[in-house]
Each structure stands twice: as C-alpha cells, then as structure tokens.
Length: 237
Length: 151
Ligand code: SF4
Ligand code: SF4
Ligand code: FES
Ligand code: FES
Image (cartoon, each protein chain N blue to C red):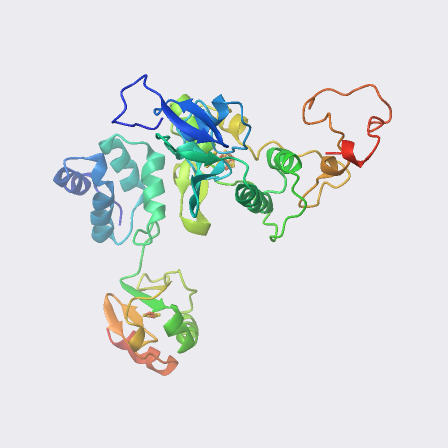
C-alpha cells in the first residue's frame, strides 16, 4: 500500500518488529507486515478488500526508539528500512484499551466491540455511554462505493454531527438493496442478550472464560459444567 | 425561489464542470439563491458526474452552506469565549425573543436568519453581532432593538 519510490518493486527492507529483525515489502502497509508475521493486533475500520481509512485507531502501534517514539495507526503507515515497531508495548496496550473504551461507550450494543473487549481484557469503561448505532468507521461507505460500485451512501455533516446517510436523507435510488453495508458494519450485529444485556461492558466471558475459549471460539467442549478444566487461578486467562 | 437550469449551467460552465471545483460551484449557487436548493444539488451532481451523496456530503459539511432558505438579513451572534463572558448569551436571548425564533432558524416572513458562531476574531469588541457581514461590537440586549430596525 505504501509507495516507496526509492525502492524498486520486489526489493525488501529490514525492519525491527518487536525486537526481531524481519524483512518487509516497502509497498505494504505496516499492518500488512505485522499480520504477515502472524502478530495479532485488533483492527476495526480495516478490511482487506477496501481502501485503508485510518479512523478507528485501534490498529495503533509504537514506532521509533529511545525518547523518539510515537504512536501511529499501522493500517495507514508505510514501512521503511530500519523502522522499529512495537505492537504490544505498555503504551500501546494502554492506548488500545482507551480507544476501545471510547468506541464501546459510543456503541455498547455492538457484538464486535464487546468481543474485542473480552479479548483485550477490558475491565471498565470510564466514559458516559452514548448508545449510538454507528461509530463512523466508514466501512459501509467504502463497501458500497468500492465493492458494490453503487455510491448510495456517504457521510454528511461534520464533527459531532457527522452521520451516515443517503443523499438528502431520502430513500436512495442508487441503492440496490444488496445488504453489503449491513454485512460489513461492526455495529449492526448485536451483542449477546445474556444476563447483563444492558450494561455498558458485558464482559461476562472475560471473568468466567476458560483458557480454551479464545482459541476455540465456536466449539463447546464436553466437560460439564464449563470451567471444570480450570484448576487454579493460573488457568484462568 | 427555485433553481433554474440555465443559471446553474452558467455557474457550472464557469468552472468547466470540474468535479474539483465542487465547493466553488456550491458557493456561487449559495450566493445566488441564499441557500442550496435541492434540485440545484441534484443538477450539479448530474453535470459534474459525481455521486449525489458526495454533493450532499460537501453541502452539509460546511457551515457556509445551507440547505434551507435563509433570511434576507443574516444575524450571527458570537458565542466565543470572550463574547460569552461579556454576556453574549443575553444578547442572543433578546434576539430570540424579539424575532420569535430560535438560533438556527429563519423568521416565517423570510426576513431574518439567526445563527450563532464561535469567535469572529474581534474579541476586544465583544459581545459581537454580525449582521450581513457588518460588525456590531459591544452589543447589549438594549441595543438589539435598534439593530433590528436599522434596515
Ligand atoms: S444495500 Fe445499498 S447502501 Fe448498502 S452497500 Fe448495497 S447498494 Fe450500498
Ligand atoms: S453504519 Fe456501521 S459500517 Fe457504517 S460507519 Fe457506522 S459503524 Fe461503520
Ligand atoms: S484499523 Fe487502522 S485505524 Fe482502523
Ligand atoms: S469570542 Fe466573539 S469575537 Fe472572539
């Protein structure tokens, strides 16, 4: 994604990724490199099939060394020779959690955000819940424009009044009702309506989840009750 | 007042129907009609061959554009920090009372539009009220009457 005019296509650069020297293609985004090496970092507004947009900031990583470090959104950041990257430094983890807190405060009903909170072990949300139904990630807009080539929806307004809409807020004749925008929306899918359905952070799974859950998300083991496998606190993630 | 196509054509042709000149085109339409009639936006989208939602997005992004008809006299009350501490809120309330509209609205006779802005860059004169680009400094609720009658 990143265009590095000095390096001809096919030539690799060396970067330091979490302390290990690895090769990277300077035409890739930093996020693509990180994912290529199998490091899992959360992303939200990014989708492989769409132009990077860089608005959710969840893909934050720290670059640089010494006292010259900074946080960048990896999905929009280029790679260059000698770049130093840390994907899980304390600063990154703290920032990532704060960003997620803000997003959840905006849309506590999103399953995707709640799942992410469980994985990042978010314990609290310090912000007033807005209970909105859109986090303005722009995925639907890009999906509609780039994959469906319909350009039926877009942003209107600005600042705190920004919202997603059809032209003139009316039924859009460009829309072909394909549903792709809803398919890709991270907020349209509602979280589980379990015992704590109206709290800001459900985190039901964070406290009782046995170590196996993140790896076998869809499977249920046969031990009854669940958690029988947990012998001591060291087994609980 | 609705947009007429030959008028719009002449505005659009001035910019060679360049999609990159969308903002300038909308500015000219706004200057012509005092607002952006919906048909004019539809027409601009068609002529520039860009998605309607893009035109709508730009038209709603800038405060200088309005999709609703505006009054012949546009009154902007500064609510910036300096004007606020000097009592611009009282001035605004007085204007709302006199005109019988809320900030952001236009009087039914189409004469006045009342709006708030955040700092017009004349803090030393605060509270400032701008009436059709004319600055009135050190406003008080009492001066509102004469401001409204001045035209
Ligand atoms: S359903 Fe309509 S708005 Fe949504 S992606 Fe399809 S064409 Fe676009
Ligand atoms: S509607 Fe959904 S996909 Fe579209 S911007 Fe909002 S949260 Fe993102
Ligand atoms: S995934 Fe990079 S900013 Fe959203
Ligand atoms: S605050 Fe009113 S002019 Fe600056």
